[in-house]
Image (cartoon, rainbow, N blue to C red; front, top):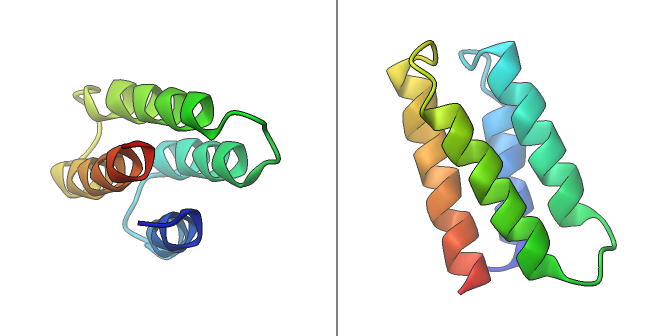
Length: 81
């Protein structure tokens, strides 16, 4: 998985009108961190995974949104590895 493919997956999730605004805000932040010109991408990816994991553990997030988040976490872990 490439960074561009990961960003594309994030864009797809951001266009999903069924996702809550709170989820989209975190996804936008994650996208900005990964797309940014930081020297160490692994740190950005690890931070993004941590943020998404914290979000997915929120009981107020709908199950369909959690599924999208888990998918993105899997993509990020593949990118990191």
